[in-house]
Length: 480
Image 1: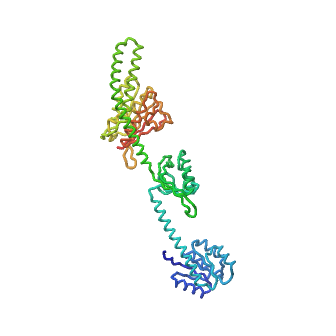
Image 2: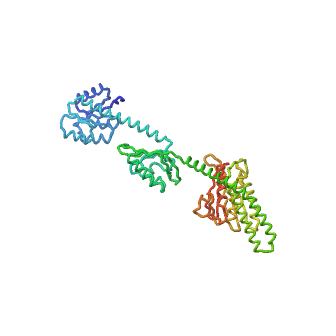
Image 3: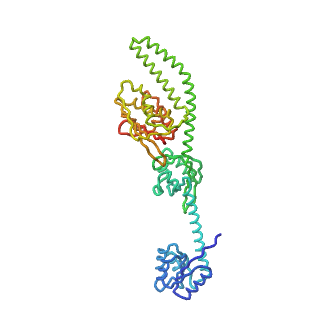
């Protein structure tokens, strides 16, 4: 056990001999003692200096204990007061304790009783200091932890979140303390499950290894692995301690791995299917060309032949798009001018544009458009986006491509915005437009924008839907 701390004592006693005698006794025990004889002196010393204990004579020339005790409690609430008096009995002792005294000793002061009272005060101070040190160490550990730490009342009211949780959720501590945790931080479709788990913890069970998302102030979900412990006494009340590890990156990696496995399976299947079907499609196309020569003087038959040819072309395109979407990406990065790449992609669509259509492409913005890219793959990106615009917009078609250089978190970026004057995308479509097989065209495969996103993300970039006042806008962001 640690040694008891020494005390600094103010002796308030109007009898000079008694005051000096008490100071000597305290000095023998290595305590520091100061003596005063009036209430005014006592109040002045307590206001200016720190004392651990006041040994107070109940009756002084200028005041009594019931007047002084409330003033001491206001000026020095951490200072313990021991009352001593030669008059009065149990009623006066009760009065002194009610006014905040920690002990009451009758005069003449029994030295052993005084020493016992001081030991109790010193022990309380030692325990308080140790608790303060432990609390400071615990708080330092909690606040520096790279984990989410949340303290809850049994009814799930938040009493504390650590800085890591503040950073992850975007909430400051004062914004969440006092709020119900589940309603504020858990997505609606997980709330019933989480409340059931918290209920089991309140019943005394520790719950470990549960995953559910935490939703932040920006409505972004972070997947968290939770361990929750019931604490029967934390600061005098029961509490729940929830510790969480952010596993969002792991979940995303698992999802990407699963997607890669699915794509590999699709790729294998489509490679075989395309190989086996190519010969049949070529034979069918050749036969249709011969048939068209035989019936070129019969317009109705020619119409049917052209429909069959278009159907075969659509089928071949579907095979190719699925194959491209599922094929593994291997980047050959070189510095290229993205403006030239966009122009080249536009030229590749010349056959689509040559049928008398009124179309125009304009490039705007920074003259420095160089980026390290895989030119062939980025041609696919811009070709797919431009082709969508040509398919969706009615003449006259106007497509504006804006280039904008930006620095974010020390990284140089090139932002390319491709905007057309067509009907635009449905407002509720959002970024799901980049999911495979999502399309707004009755003839589309729903793979064009999915391929765009896959290629851009392979370049460590991002692609998103813009929200222009009219038309559709695709925004591609690439690291330079």
